[in-house]
Structures are given as C-alpha cells and as structure tokens.
Length: 423
Image: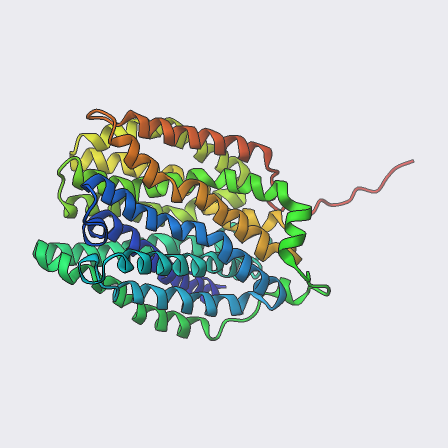
C-alpha cells in the first residue's frame, strides 16, 4: 500500500502540475501575450476562458478513460492519460505568441488546453480507484487521500517554478521566454511518472468483475444519473474555493491591488502547503466519523468564510491575505480529503471508473471553469472590496451543502456479532 500510494501521489502531482502551471500563467502573462488587442481586464478574462476549456474537456476525458478503466482496467488509464497531459503541456510552452502568428496563437492554446483537460479527466479516476480498491475498508479514506495530496504538490511545484523565474528574471525576460520554462519541465516530469507507474498491479476489484459493462457511460446515465448530478453539484464548492484562492486571487492581487507576484505566490503557496499536510489528518477523521459529516462541515465552513476571505484579500496585507486563504483551504480539505474514498464507494465496481470520474469532473466544470471568469467580471464592477465575489462563492457553497445532504453515508461499518434468536 505504501508503494502504491506513493506512486499514485507522484503521478497525480505530475499531472496536476501540468494543469496548474497553465492557470498560473493565465493569471500572470497569457492575456497580454495572446490577447494583446484586449483591455487588461478583458485579456485576463480571455486567458481564463482558455483556462476554463480544460475543465470542459475533463468530463469528456472521464468518459473516454472511464470506458477504458471499466473495460480494460485501471492501470492502462494511468499511462495513457499521463502521456497525453505531458505532451500537450510541453507543446503549450512552444506555441508562438499573437505577435508572431496572429489569431492562430490563441487557437493553438485552446486546442492544447483541451487536450490537457482530456488527459486529466482520466487521471483522477484511474489513480484514485487503483489506490482505493487496494486499500483495507477500515482505512480506505486514509490510503485514498494520498492521490488527493498530489494536486497540492503539483500546485506547489508549478508555482514554485514560476516564483523562482519571476523573482530571478526581469519583466521582459519573463514575458519573452521565462514563462515557457515550467511547461517544458513537464516533459521531464512525465517521463519520471511513467517510470513510477510501470510496475503497479491491477486493482483487485476490477479483476473480480465477471461481467464488465459493455458501454459504462450508458449504464451510468440509465441507472445512476441522479447520483452523478448530486456528486457534481456537491463537489462544485471545492473547485470554486480552490480556484478562487489559487487563480482568481492571484490575478486580482497583482492587477487590481498592485501586490507583487512574489508576495501573492508566497501567500497562496503557504496556504496550499497546510492544505496538503492536513489531507491525511482529515482522511483519518473520515474513516472514524464518516465521509458525509466531513463534507457537510467543509461546505458549511466555506459558505461562512467566503466574504471574510474576500475582505482580507482586499487589504493587500500579506498576513491577512494568508489568513483568508488558509481558512478557505482548511474548509476545502475537510471535504476533499475523503472524496477519493466517498465517490468510489457510491458506485458499483462495474461502472465505478466512469461514474466516479464523470461526477468528479462535472463538479470541476460547475466550480472550477466558471469561478475565475465570473469572479473577475464581478470584481471589475465592485468597490475596494468585491463583495459580489464573496456572495457568489458562498452561494455555490450553500448549493453544494444541499447536494451533500442528499447523498448517503458510505463508510464501512464493523461486522456485528450475530445474537442467537430466542423463542
């Protein structure tokens, strides 16, 4: 389990590095380079639009790779999805800017971002299921939480590279070639990830299935459509909170508040470090007290904290901004630490890879794709404190809270000792 969890964590970290490095670049440089004819705010909105395309592609990737995972096994999904995401990320770093090739530049960016999302849509289902289905039931949330640490590690890697480059290069050097380096690094990481995953064993739950679903998506839509919609709605708050902190606030802080890139990145990264460290702790609580109670608590905390977070961000003071991000990340991890065990337990094994991945990635469309765009638009029409952003995020949290309330608990319970009946 240790070797399997480590390989899943490393592979997930690499794939999310690829995905997050684009979000950071979109917040910092892609607007002026690929949409130079737009105003600064409109350019940022356009860059976030290409960012959102990755989320739209993720459910399609979960359908494609979910079909492979339910028909051929979880292990092949991990290899193909990593290759696709890695290759498209390296290619983003090679795309000429608008100044060189005109409108072809943002179009290429759009296509490659779509391919990135397609690969990541398959990655989560394969990595989580391979770990969760190997894990003992009483510690499933703990072991399945290791792939959930991967996004935090990937985010820190992506932003760490960006931080070093932005701090060591001039503005002109960073805009000319420095922003491309993190995308090229993805190629090296992809090779390392393939090596790590080459020796993983197939999931025992998959090997025990006698009758594999012929068309997994058709069965999911026919028999589990309500569950898919509820899980997508429930997970929307996690994506909204995470990308409000890591993507929108980065753009808002640097462009509207005049805070330096370095300060913003340090504040956000510090909060994400705490989030990653607390993931296994929250997962242990999920094994002890159940998945649903933690999800309800996290959603409620997010609903209460979004307006204070926006107010703290608007001060531009590093410690206050960090506090706002930190509490938001704690609310986030309270939910998402147990999701890797919760979602697979909601679906039967024959369609688990498709059902869990589609629900997870549809939540990304609802919460992740729209949040930077909507928040940027709302902030552009607000005063010093963009209360509209806080209200929008709190509304999503309340919606997700209602969806979690309608989902059942799935935590395995110890077998009861049967008491002989008396006459």
